[in-house]
Length: 261
Image 1 (cartoon, rainbow, N blue to C red):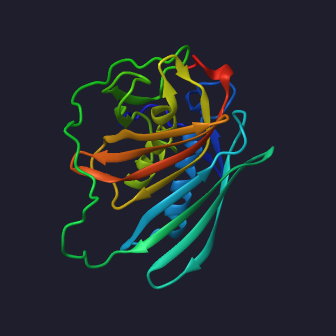
Image 2 (spheres, rainbow, N blue to C red):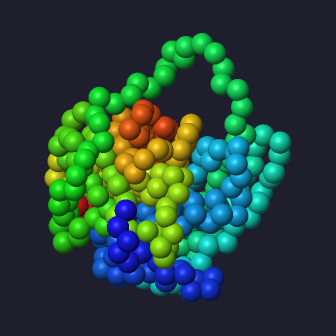
Image 3 (cartoon, rainbow, N blue to C red):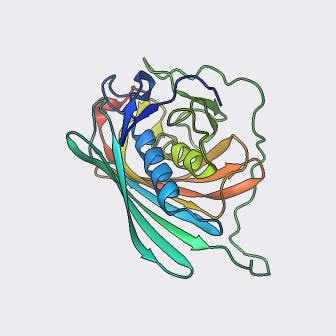
């Protein structure tokens, strides 16, 4: 990970965005993937515990925000022997812009036996060396991206991703935060078509059997369904050693977006 400027600078309770925190859709809009990352960071700092696995993170992205300072507040919803549930609210001076909910499950003994629907490991190894330029229209992704399949073509789309910048100040991004950041790419990967991306996601739900190992997180689009301008897509999440979980998104049609990516 580069030690160049982080996406956000911490100033008291506020997180002030840097210019490269912008969205591909507008130079004065915060990128939604970073809101999920900030929610994951706050939830982990406030409610994480050794032996408790972040098994689910749902991020609702219901309001675009200009490049304003962000605050994140968390609430413990339930704390049981084997399950912990916590929420996060992401706000700016203009009000609430996103919310998140996390489920943490207690580690335990792994059941014996084969599972009939087990997801196989990829036949794609993480890349080595620098990533190719991945410019999308007038926007260059502020993360490394290796595209392993044609954009929006039939069949499962595959990418490897790697973070280039810290999320906040010089903090190393934890495996959970890196997974939350990568998960947002489930929308363009599962919803793209050959002439661009015509759906914008309203949320994403990341489920994890384990946290990613190493810097690279891989995504493979495994489904898309849409009707009357409403879509849902899904991806399988991978690291170098195999599948780690899944991500599902819902999205709404926005034809004007067509060739933005």
